[in-house]
Image (cartoon, rainbow, N blue to C red; front, side, top):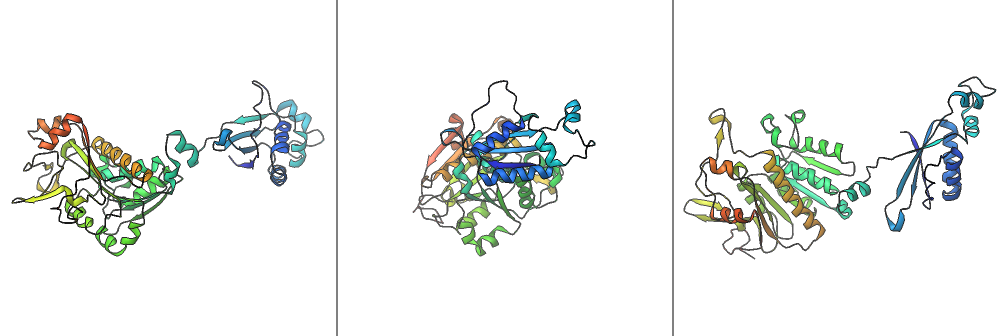
Length: 387
C-alpha cells in the first residue's frame, strides 16, 4: 500500500474492545504523540492524495522492545453517507482537502502490518541480531555450500561473499538450493539473486573467478571476513587453499561422505588446520576423519564412463548444511570458539546394502550418531606441524 509513516514518541493506549475508531480518533493520536512537523506533513500529504488513504504509525515498544507498528485505512464515505458528504458537489468533483475535512466521522479500519524488517523477522525465529554485522565468505556454492548460504542468511548473517566458478548443471537440481530456472548460470551469481530475492536485509557479493587465483591475489579481502566456509568437495583443492591462510583466519572446512553416510565440519584454529586430518602411507594421502573404510569404490554411472558421480541426496546436503550453519553461528557469536571437528552419521542402510563398510571411526560415530572432538594438532601435519 502507498502509505504515510508517522513516528510516535509514545505507544497510545489500546482502544476498548469492540470500539469503533474514526478519522478524528486517529488525528487525536497524532495531536498527542507525534511531532508537529510530522503531523503537519501527514495532513499536507492526505489533502493531496485524498481518500481512501493508509496511515502507518511507529511507536516505542514496551520495556525496551523493538518498535511497534500500527496501521489503519482512512475509509471513504459510501452510499447515503457519500451523498450527504458531497452535498453541493457532483460526485467525484469535491476537492480532496474538503472531502478529508468533512470525513472526520468516517471509519478508520485497523490493518495488520506485515513486517519484514530484520529486527522483527530474526526475533521471531530466535535469531541473534548481532549477526547482522557478521560477514561470511563461502568458497564452493554446490549442493552443500548453497544450502549453508541459505541457512546463514536465514539466521540473520548480514553479509555473504559467494565464490564458485562452476555453472549449475541440470543433473544437480535435486540436491541444490537452486532449481531448473538457474541451470546454465554461474552458481555464485544465481545464488546471489536467489538470496537477495528472499532476504531483504542481506548484502551479497558473488564472483565466478578461480578460487586459487582469487585467494592468491586478494587474500586480504577474504581475511577481512568474520569466517570463511570451504565446501568445495575437493580435498586436494582445499589442502592447497589451507596453505594460504594462517591460524588467525577462522575457517570451517565442510564435506560429505558418499551415499548419505554422514559428513564433517572442521573449525580450524591455532591448534588445528585442515591438513591435520590427513596422513600419508604407502598408498598415499588419506583422511583420518573418514567414516568409510579405505579402498572402496563409490563411483556410480548411468551413461557409462562419461557420467561418473558419487551419490548423495538433498537430505544429506541439508543435514550437513544445518550442522555447518550451527557451528558457524556459534563461532560468529563467540570469537574465542575453540577449534573442533564435528562428525555426524546420516543413513548408512543403503551404503551397507551396497556391500560397503564403515571405517573404525565410522563405527564409533555410528554408536553416538554425532561426535565432537577437540583440537588435536598433529606434529606430522605437512602444513602447520601441529602448532
